[in-house]
Amino acid sequence: MEESEGRLSKPVAVIACIAMTLFYVAILYAPTLILRLPPPQSYENFMIRRFICAAVCSVASVIFCALVLPITSGEASYSFGVYGIRSDHFAPVTEELVFRACMIPLLLCGGFKAYNAIFLCPTFFSLAHLNHMMEIYSRHNYSLLKASLVVGLQLGYTVVFGSYASFLFIRTGNIVAPLVAHAFCNYMGLPVLFVHGKGPVSIAFVAGMVSFVWLLFPITQPDLYNENTNNCRCWQGYCSWNQ
Image 1: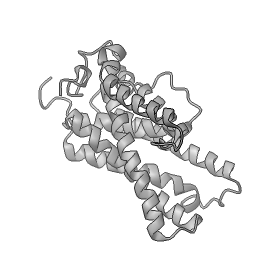
Image 2 (image 1 turned 90 degrees about the vertical axis):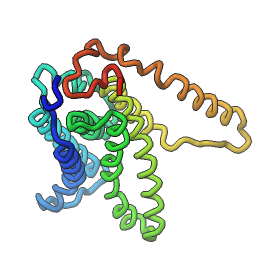
Image 3 (image 1 turned 180 degrees about the vertical axis):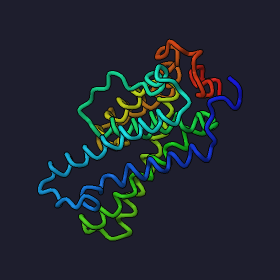
């Protein structure tokens, strides 16, 4: 493929990612601020309302990318890799669709290198969590400093995990890989680095970290997850990982 064929400009790709990030956050507050609906009466109703808003944003983002990206309808299912998604954790599904399946193709088709996209995409992912600061500050009566520290820790964690999830998506070419990792991380929470009086747990943690680093590239070989490693339209050859 020639340099100018099927290529977005970098500014357009970044602006599109920023717009989707803002839309993902803004739509969560649309029922109250725009539709003027009364506040939910229970936590269950609150979560259902947020799930619906996130689903609307995800569908809108997928449609937007399908229109903007230089791919055909037959290539869309391959690029996004969204077939067969089933999960009891709704948030990972919507977040991975928007921040991985939609944004990474935009960045790669915009001319960003694979490694740049891995570290740039989590920036948008972390910015989408800034709204938690006001929620923590107002609902839990935390001081502004304490709320900032809590959100700062959360943002740091989302950047680290977002980089890993972006790596998985680009490396495997399948959204299922970061989706499973996201659901697992949400279920497990922050890792416990050391447990007082439980040496075997700490040893197992260290062994797990060593195994993770050792097996990271072998078990994410693109050939294990892709049959079309030579058909990477505008994805800058990510399938063969030659960046």
